[in-house]
Length: 242
Image 1 (cartoon, rainbow, N blue to C red):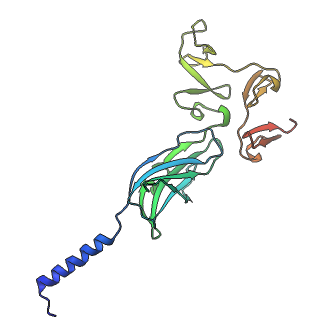
Image 2: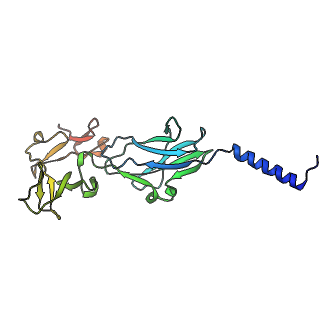
Image 3: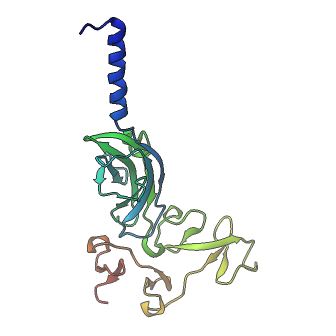
């Protein structure tokens, strides 16, 4: 059979169109929902992501690191919704004080074909992130606490309720005007104590200041100060003698 130049061009075009029709579309990540700062050291921290165009052969993964590490670990096994466009991925629990960074990726034939954020593999500063705050509000600085709702006072994240001018100001019940701060704010005060028995279970008595302060959060015994053990059921450190 003899084929003219025009016929050959049409044949090539037909082959291209057929191949295009058979090739799966490139997936598009429509959005990622961040877990947000948490006081839970156990996890999992659930990421939800909407992705269009994922095939049965594709894998949806989270690539994550902790505290700015450049090597990313992988979490597979994303759960898909019935329509196949919403995926849930659980990141493992991390110790208090950690910053977790991550990106979401779609893998096809061993290659990343879509990811969010797009430049996330360029460095930790380009990844999504959230913090694991101190268990039960223990802190060393305001940055350890929930932004805009708590500040660090007497070693604990304490809620505040507006500003005040001095001790005589009227603050909401359960708060007092903290005159040693600038600006002065209505702050939940520490409970006074003489022994641990005078504090809630999640706190211990600071005998020098005679106030209740948060116990150290933990996942394992190595997270606790010397002389204390980890109550893994509570995620808190207790003196061994207790």
